[in-house]
Image (tube, rainbow, N blue to C red; front, side, top):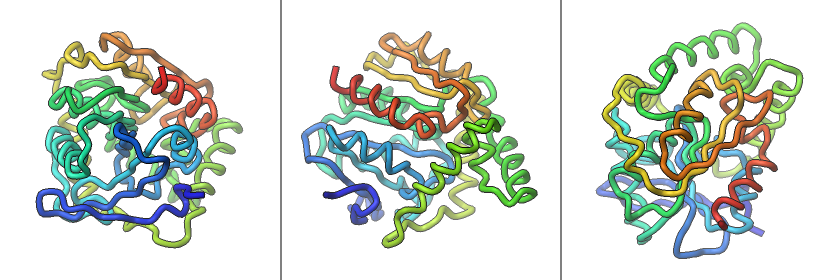
Length: 277
């Protein structure tokens, strides 16, 4: 049985650049496209989440332009990232998709839905926030603090950035990181410093601008987060649910930015119910 752990890496040309992607699940006309976070590549998706979603959906994860194994240069704006994501979807021949955007990927998902509304059916936004959201422009400083703490303790930065510092939160971090290391062959390339710089610039701009109108996104949306997200502060999830016309909200207790990974079983059930409904 194909799982995310053993799914082969594939490539497709998108406006002159080779985009790397993996796909699992039974092929369907409306796939679920995964949009990932700052510094992330394909191997940063939790196999428990991807495999769980693929039990009922055709799931595609990809590296956007300049990220990991994909060619080209990473753009420094969310709008351009969204344009590239839409071009990738159309290059695969799809006319309608569902989106799961985590963190930075959630910004991109909102922009895709706003600029290409006919391309999108439903949206899941996790650990993310609206344009101009509280604390989003500070992600760079939060990232540096997490890297500093990781260097001082010998832990992975995600112990500090994605999970609460409680016993339960740190145990969930250990389990999550172990799952990310399950794949041994065909691993993705890490992000470059140039990509990280471009992504941080895009996040900074998203966090300081307030021209984006959430009311224009009429699609059904599931918003999910932990109750103590330090990267995209949890208040932003409440703001998304309050201003999106057709949204529902799920907040996980004793959890941070990576709440959907800490509570992967619950999140997958919620996501499948939402996509099925």
